[in-house]
Length: 153
Image 1 (cartoon, rainbow, N blue to C red):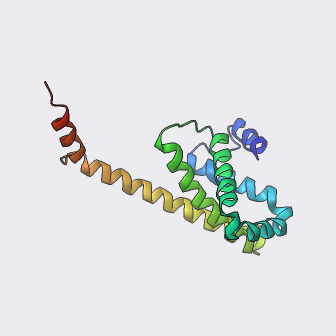
Image 2 (image 1 turned 90 degrees about the vertical axis):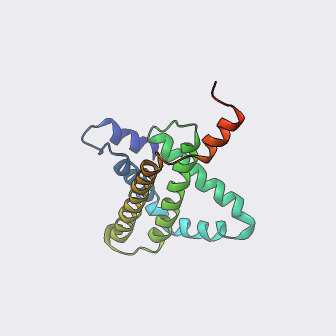
């Protein structure tokens, strides 16, 4: 997967440089490479769904989304590191379940589902930005408490 992502990223016409397009491409590459082994993936998911394998399942999912973000060039170390991976984990895992059951030609249902999930994430990010902008001028409880503890001199 990494080699294919790097190959597409090196070719300026090979991959759209917007992050949503790069994430979509990364997930598609992952599924396309696993396509010959779809039945094995389905069975592995059945085993990973067992309660005694919950930790292994979470660890595997986290590693997968971490590899995707690293391949896309993400080097964040703050809270964004975790929120990006948690969001991608939700998108990836839901798409994986759709992909396993998809019998449409060229996985058209999976790709449409993936596009809708990415669009949902983008709508949520826009909403967060609007909310932050609207609350910039409101009084902040944490700022107030900080001023009580450390008064401005």
